[in-house]
Length: 305
Ligand code: MN
Image (cartoon, rainbow, N blue to C red):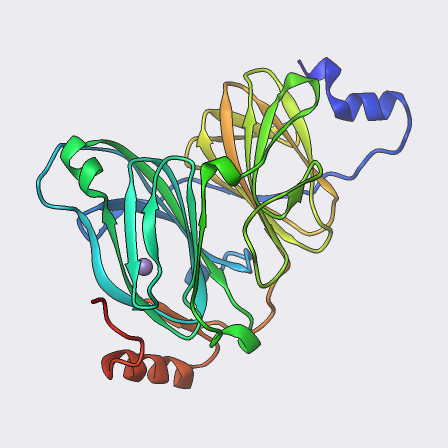
């Protein structure tokens, strides 16, 4: 119940009320499209629709979708990336990844793949053989995370963050827990190595409970509701697949769950540089995009063996 919220205890003890970060916008999910034949996605935000979410460039929400058992793996075949990172978080199903830098692996529920495309990789993202044969629920998120100009041509890198290595912190008053993929929360540090400061947290709240989530001043902050329904800052409702952007100012956001809820919180220091993207490449200028296309076509980003 709200009566026992931390916020109100802070108030009653007059130890200083943290300022709430204001809600700027709540967006309903857009219509979906398919990425290859394996990923029915809704693009929750993208850099070309001007969402002030830097350093995050894009979020695709895949599923939830039931796949029937099949023989032939579904997914998206060989394609390049340059100039940013792709972060894939799996909730249901299994994804196999293989790239021209020799990176690869299988991620399942709770696992995260944090791939730095940097100067360029060619990769494929496919359902695993086991999951293809088994079928069943598929649900995942892919984030695109920008790199600053000085790091766009950094060497490709691949981090597999297993669920077992991602810390889960209990929230006060048995309200739920926070899973810390990147950044710090409640004294726990997420395993993701990032090039610029950012946080990726999953906040799990029990129905009727709430939490105060401290955020870094100056960060762009947003959240996505994966499950259930939450009220933001005590009043703005947000439900499944809705995306909430916060404005500037404020030190905390407050989340109250009207039903059991799972909320993905994104926070990061903005990269205030020009963004010029084309398909799978995100650079700073049109010339750099032309170079990326040329480098890919001439094989300089490699091929899958
Ligand atoms: Mn890709």
